[in-house]
Length: 121
Image (cartoon, rainbow, N blue to C red):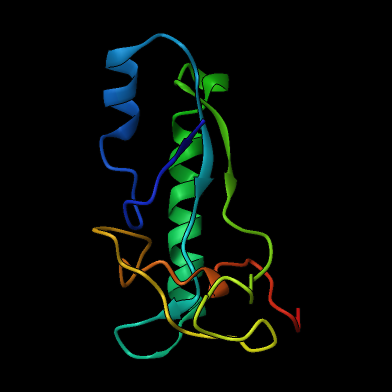
């Protein structure tokens, strides 16, 4: 499987992959977190938009309809409060990393905010 974070679209990923191999593609990780570092606040709308768009692209390139993709896992099911090494495992910290690209909308990996569900839902 491959882990892909290119924003709210996979772009040419499926075409490039299909040009390299006839083997099916599995996305081990894809998605977006709910913390928007641009505005220093939670942004559930942007997270839902990105995950929805990416999931639709996977379905459009599904092996069930002649595509190359056999599926993928959204990263991640629940928030990971222990991920910020400078923070506290009992606090929802906001120090993400931006190693040259990341999830939509701020291109910053805020893994403590990556869950589809949080502590309250």
